[in-house]
Amino acid sequence: MLDGSRDLSQRELGVSLWKITGNTLCVYSDPIFMEMKSCVDFNLEKRIMKTSKEAGYHIEKLTADSLVITQRVDGEEAPDKIRKIWFVNNSLRINNFLKQYKNDTVITATREFTP
Image (cartoon, rainbow, N blue to C red):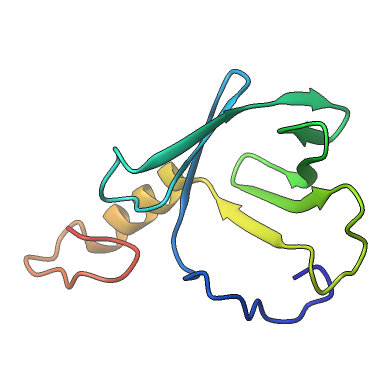
């Protein structure tokens, strides 16, 4: 959350995949099953990805390897209700994983990567 507290909602937290193509944002609820996605068009206004008249995401940091956003909803000001989300560039993660294990004959599956 924006105030640094943990998100205590009933939503499962974990790995999620976002893809931005043009002005379309697709959120994949399960990175393994790519057909399980939800897409929405957005308008980029300054550092805000407006997904509707009332909501969007504020881009706090954007680099080649990471993205940090905060959820914005009109009327919501409480810092314990505003989600802050950190993303890393998936291709960098995959490349680092492959470098680390390229000579191994056995790779143990993890929550983030299934060989």
